[in-house]
Amino acid sequence: MHNKISRSVALVVMGTGIVSCSPEGKMEQPPNILFIMTDDHTQQALHAYGHGLLDTVLFPNMDRLAKEGAIFTRSFVTNSISAPSRAVMLTGKHSHLNGQIDNGRGRFDWNQQTYPKLLQKAGYQTALVGKIHIDGVPQGFDYSMTLPGQGHYYNPDFIKNGDERIQFEGHSTRLITQFVMDWLEYDRDRNKPFAMLFHTKAPHRNWMPETKYLNFLEDHDYDLPHSFFDDYSGRGAAAREQELEILNHTYWGLDMKFEENPLTGERDIRYDRNLDRMTDEQRIAWRNVYDPLNEAFLENVPENKYEIIFQSIPRDISHDFLQNTAEGLQIARFMYNRYLRDYLKTVKSVDDGIGRVIEYLEKNDLLEKTVIIYTSDQGFYLGEHGWYDKRFMYEQSLSTPLLVRYPSEIEAGTKVYDLVQNLDLAPTILDYAGVEIPDDMQGKSFRKLAAGEEVDNWRDAIYYHYYDYPSAHMVKRHYGIRTDRYKLIHFYYDINEWELYDLETDPDEMLNVYDSPEYADIQSIMHEKLKKLKIRYGDSDRIYFPGF
Ligand code: SGN
Ligand code: CA
Image (cartoon, rainbow, N blue to C red; front, side, top):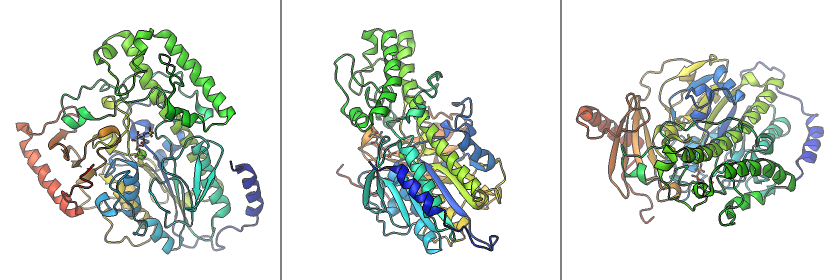
């Protein structure tokens, strides 16, 4: 493993000789860009969004960005999954044009136009650190330090500048933060503005917290969301046939963090692979927390009841038992809390990392000269509908957090209600940098919206298209539009079903009102809008990878 500490010390010596910035200082220089993107962090897990899940501020640095900048309350993705979302952000184009339509089958050609390349051309120094999840050597960056594929939480490998693979000791979030700081401190050319893409792995599955936060929130018992025992009766086959359920589709090892199945003595190979990466010290810290918690659970619930957890998936369980008996509820609450707490623990480290980088900017007189954008590659279910993961065009995973801090033009506490998408990030960043936005980018700059200005003819609907099926979690292919109030979705490929939701009367999307007589007019208006947007964005009815 690479010894990080000695490298940093060496760089401190090298770094002391660097003279900072231009002597004129006040010359009009475009702002720096700090683009922070987490993986699977959702609006419900950010106090500033006010969804009610978090009763206190758990993540003060993220909340600080919201408080000191603009929060976008209607921020969405175009395709709720990692690689496609990242490709949309880089190019400002929908998936069918940038080529990365899903995680596994679509391909991204790095030779195409991306905003980091355009920034570079305009004199920016560009860097990418963390998860990128797009195959090939990243182009458009003066420096990159990326995780291969999904990467690991503990002692992960990194790929430096596209070729050198190095394993580092530590937790991925701390390492990624450190690489961001090291580059800012030691490797950056201080005469140029910078664009730093700070991409974490956390809080992606399987939610492995750093040792410091293993106990975080363990004294906090979260109530089940009111739609947790959803039976999907108000919707179609897609909602019924997914594999996203916390109770049915999580593994007792990998997700629930039992090292051994108490009924069969088996181990979970995938969980073991993660544990095997740990140093002895990390593993002891890990076991010191999870072992007693797991034992306490097993002691308190009779064996013939807790056996539910240790079945292979999908589990054969009765919702009636889990929902309506004290013992059942205890099991459901245990599974939900294990999932949710681990998820939040991993966000905690990200928040620390953001705090460290903000502090660095502040100390180096860079904070006010830097546009800070905080977002995630998509939202996530935290038990709503009984689910984890993402992919659906339903609210929790269609949405994504979006915060922008740039005090010289964004007033603290700004709230933006207009419909924005990850498609808009590339043009927005170019706009802040003073670089011309290419005509073929499909997103729009939201810079003015963040500054509290109204923009004429801002979009009144967003377009969405998800293709990753058949695949993990079995969410069927679908596309659709969402306006301020309504959502129209078409599920296709192996079914042909339409859904329509009235988000004002049914914010939880429990009842599909497609074909309801009282929504007949809305339905046809939404169909018209969908048709127009499909044409505007150049999408078609082409079936990608029909053989799968
Ligand atoms: C992994 C996860 C899935 C997740 C996908 C995509 N399984 O396959 O739960 O949906 O990544 O996530 S895991 O057991 O390997 O963690 S994405 O954010 O990268 O699109
Ligand atoms: Ca993701």
